[in-house]
Image 1 (cartoon, one colour):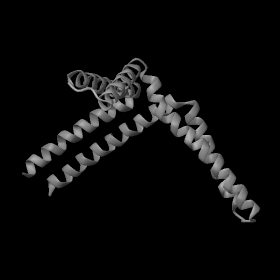
Image 2 (spheres, one colour):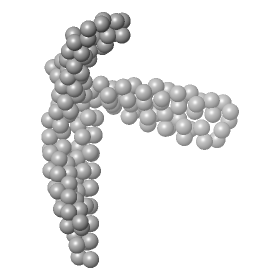
Image 3 (tube, rainbow, N blue to C red):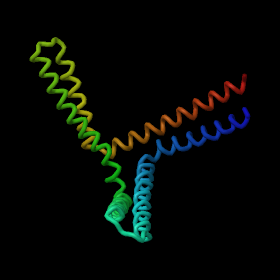
Image 4 (cartoon, one colour):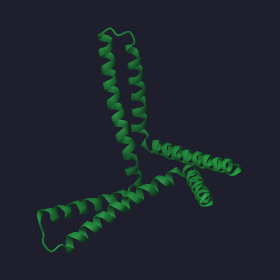
Length: 174
């Protein structure tokens, strides 16, 4: 039992190590792969919905709405498949816009604190500008944010793999 667990942990660690190194070296390939995978899933659901609709004998408003949804999903999947970089940049773009909006809210709060004569109001002002800068960086560089994120995940996988190997080594000595 212990040998099986040890072998499984070693295999998992090696897999993590290989995937982590790949993510560090080729973040754009990983990003594209994820987008292609998501695009394929949407296309699959679209085709499955159309097939389901065509095999349904009784057509109702519900089955018609499933057909419409299936067509939309399939079209979205094709779009993602043809434009993986656009899809990949969408998520950081939304996060960046959220951070910019949040920074404006924080700026307003800091000015309210100043009106209330709170002595440390400027802390919130600094935070609002820091959040604004990060939000703008993300909005104007969504591809770079994805690359950095994928590399960070790769580094974490490598660290986890090395930690597992170290743990296996120490437990093996016991």
